[in-house]
Image (cartoon, rainbow over all chains, first blue to last red; front, side, top):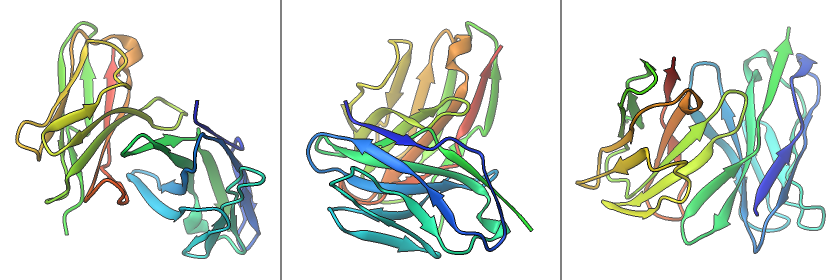
Length: 113
Length: 113
């Protein structure tokens, strides 16, 4: 079935370091791809999305490119801040006629000053 | 404006008790989703409503789980005869239409003792 695999955490970085969180997927058809972020004590928030191959989603300095050939959607940021500390979830939507989200297990990011 | 709200935020139940979890979606949102998030895992789809119609309940783990949205707005997820494995965070999300971004509530953390 459809699934998402993302790198295990925690990912520990110093402020201003470069961030990559890997995400690969398995899906039938042509899914849309998402990154959601969960800050401590808050609900899931959509960070960025891409709906077709080679699309790049971007928001708040984060970027991810939909790579159909490698079935990947890696999240990157050039310079992380302490406030980026959160859990990041990669997800896809399945072609079921509605937008059912399938999530990865999440990657915790810890950024120290 | 108001986002998705859920109540209670925390619920402790004794094994065998029935619980009811409430979701207030964003006003006007047609689609409503319930997800279950076990500790350290990504959210998993439970069920989907379009207005008052429950169009998919394939993710409900057993017949002890029941969801309703009688007037197409507020939704309730009911769990009968709770078991320890039901302990999780229950997330509600809503969206304007089928293809729109899902907005998540803060979740209800259920602990079954």
